[in-house]
Image (cartoon, rainbow, N blue to C red; front, side, top):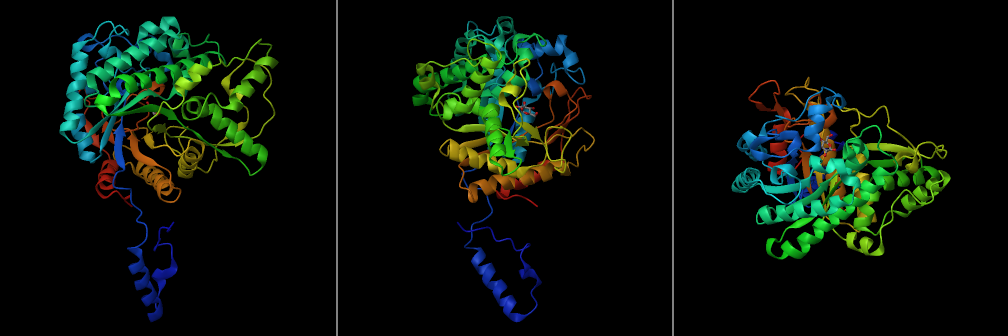
Amino acid sequence: MKKKINLVESNLLNVNDMSEKFLLILVFLGFSNAIEWKFPADFKFGVATSAYQIEGGWNADGKGTSIWDTLGHNRSILVKDRSNGDIACNSYNKWEEDVQMVKNLGVDTYRFSLAWTRILPEGYATRVNQPGVDYYNKLINKLIENGIEPVVTLYHWDLPQVFSALGGWTNPVIVLHFANYARKAFELFGDRVKTWITINEPRLICEEYKGLVGDVTENFPLGISEYLCAQNVLKAHAEAYHIYDREFRKTQNGKISITVDMTWSEPATNNSEDIKAAEQNLQFDFGIYTNPIFNFDYPKIVIDRVARRSKMENFTQSRLPQFTTAEKLKIRGTYDFLGINHYVTMYSKAANEPPITKPSVKTDAGGERFRDEKWKGCAANWIKLVPWGLRNLLKWIKINYRNPEIIITENGYADDGTEVLEDDGRIEYYQGYLNATLQAIIEDEVNVKGYMAWSLMDNYEWTHGYELRFGLYHVNFTDPNRTRTPKKSVKFFKNLTNTKTIPN
Ligand code: BGC
């Protein structure tokens, strides 16, 4: 593989005698022959959002209530600025302007999610809310009219409230209801939507927001509920995949998969114990979701460790529910690509077995995790600039999952509103991560086919409310008009999509 020729780093620019100048000319001639540091022609750039974070119109035109509507209304104490997404960016009304913003970026794709309760207000597929369907039809049609491919997430966390009382994702009945909803969505929009993502970030659903699953934040049985949730998420995903496969693929000809948030765990040293700890952390963080789909069953280390710790805790059986062989076979291979959201890299170090206290995924995972204090950060304290972490992650996926097609469905940087429009930090972040993506494609031959920035515009950042801003476009949330203004990074992105090279 030919390497990138970096003239700036080489000493050749300091030449002052004739023979060296001659050499320089030769290098320039050879340069045209070398691999260009450019994204492949079929590589797709995009931007991403999700329904609850941008739409507003929480009860407009017959929309039903979701768990995030309820949280925002009743339990705002969990949200840093006590805000909610009732209006958010008001995309329910400003969608045409949003499409123009996407178009202005010159991207190929726009990833957004459907609000389940806008389409099926009761959560069940018993009644379709036509105005909700009209809203998404208008949006999808306008995107296509403007040459932008819609990439649609079915579930980005806004569970119909009705399922909360049943235990949300911990109750297996959710599998059937999600499958019915997915079928409806394929029926309604699949003639135009060719890339589907069933579920966004199962770990966040099952582990981070576990309290919301059953609407009982404090009392949720940890170390149990997460695994029940994981199992149902995987079954629901597989069910939707098979419905698409059986009933729609032939006529609609699209592709479908899941998006998983993938934290990279780097061994703290070359010591074999630390290497083992890092691998263990990877498998507990995301392998629990990806291994059943891209390989078979839960990762062995997860099965073994949860069984061992459950025994130590006097459980009569493992807290990790087993799949039947039929279920394992049904989940295996339910992907046409792998969607990854990447934000975090951490070091992993071997540690003593955590003491037996309350069961939790964290203690099941073991190991000690930390960040390098020297890594540059941003307003979101969990996000640091560690582009090599993404590159290592991509290589890991290639090796462990037989080089699947990968779409990076989210990657992004938060400001706190003080950087306002001169978001140089964001540009530096994107330069780093796009370069790592290119290294993975060109030098490691990883099959990455797309990259989507999170996010098109500032929006409702879940429990951080409006305090963290991930947008390429600034949104003024105190202005009733929710005025959008391009940040400096918009220019950077236009340049990127125009040239397929990373602007300096
Ligand atoms: C989620 C987004 C969120 C982003 C930034 C991802 O976990 O999918 O909804 O806004 O991270 O925190």
